[in-house]
Image 1 (cartoon, rainbow, N blue to C red):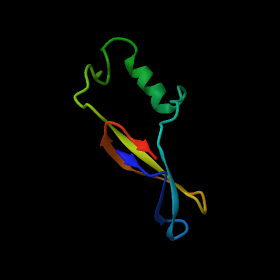
Image 2 (image 1 turned 120 degrees about the horizontal axis):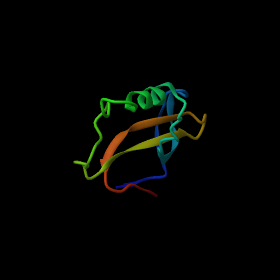
Image 3 (image 1 turned 180 degrees about the vertical axis):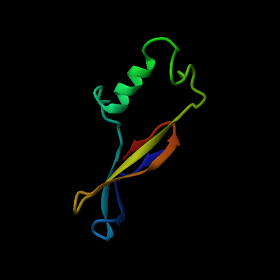
Length: 91
């Protein structure tokens, strides 16, 4: 799918339609010392096997791509719900 680099859409902070820059959202690096990560490691240790099932093979052929929309006036960033597509080209 082709998406424009810039689009005019509603900005909740400006409370008006403004020009927004579009980019692809990328998840940050996971923190090993976060509470959930520590809890997961603790659950995996010892006897009793894996707490959460490991996904052996993917049933889906695509991933949901989330768009990051940044207002060019105030710099407010929000995410647009993920769209399932093979390839996203921002032009």
